[in-house]
Amino acid sequence: AVDCPGKIYDIEEFYRPCHSEGGKCIMNVKHAVDVLFGEILAKFGDCSNFEGGDVLVFLSGSAQITDCVEQITSRAIKENMPFVVAYPLYSQMDEKDKKAATDKDHRTGLDCMTDGSHEYSRKVICSTNIAETSLTIDGVRFVIEG
Image (cartoon, rainbow, N blue to C red; front, side):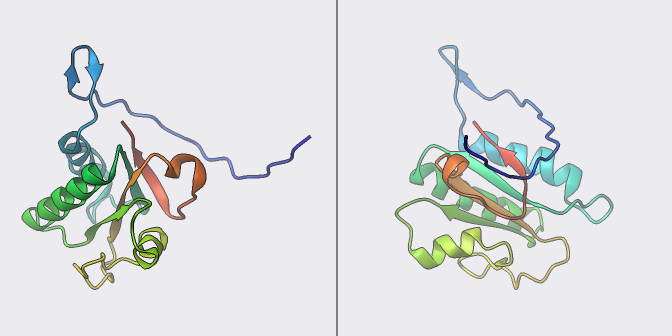
């Protein structure tokens, strides 16, 4: 017998249909960014209803991850949300950048987009789904998965 102690958390699932092609649901970057800003940040991101916790976005590869980080950064600037900082996380990255992405206290972004001290800071980690089974990232409260 194997004993695997762990913590149990209540989970709420919210289905947001994605774009479909030929009857198959295609999780694209724009959909993930729209769900992030339209659902998570709109409901839990401002000072009147802020709930702590970071966001983990699962994507299919490094190209989608890079695109998603760029779109999140661009939209955060456009919507005057400097406290939203996106990080990529995939196997080919430098170890120091991987550590920054998984360190719950690192909140400046890899390009130092912010000083990381905003009280409503929200870290968004864009990763491949390998992180589902091989990695625990402290502080994650919201997950967007295709």
